[in-house]
Image (tube, rainbow, N blue to C red; front, side, top):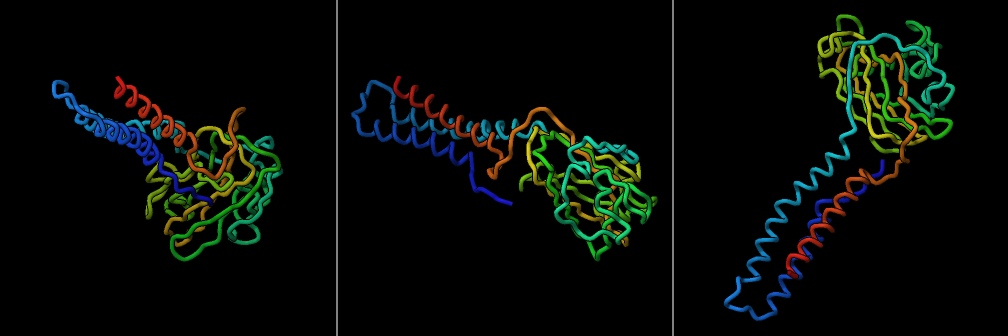
Length: 271
């Protein structure tokens, strides 16, 4: 997963302080009329106010970019098959996945298939492994898929934390688009959400991608292979393609904020 080390607050601070520092040097090079207030003092005070207020503006811009995201976890059963869903097994290619419990547990059942015979068709269980581990499923859609959320259906063994997950993460084109905490470590769905079977419904700003990765973090039960009943995309008519730069909207807002403050300060100084 690519990562770009770009700090919007630092960029905006550089823009504002650069402008004010330039004006400070300009005033220092001029003679000051003793009957007028000290221009240099006014500039320093103005600079201090801007630098105090700027982080608040930047934080607001970051919150705006994440305002779309939400997750609701409710009791649920087995989801109905939906062949028109972008994540239906005939519409995707599973490129790799962590081992399932055995050959009778088919990973396609995570995406609406009915091939498993281990417990029942329409469910898949990952192989048990010592300790708390993660299970991965990598898949691609046959064509670019635009989604603004998903529904993930999970179930644990009744009356225990076996087969439960503590976290789910979804990546699209290598970028994290959802990261959801589930049952607490050592706890269960029943304790946390009132049911052994749950529907994790997440929503976020629409994105378009073809490559996806689903990551499940197991609980610490004796039988810790996570059980999945289904995974469906929530579709939208809009969306924007993902690129490796994280939170581009936040970066653009921060840059714009810095430029606006710089222009404002310069105008105040000139007058």
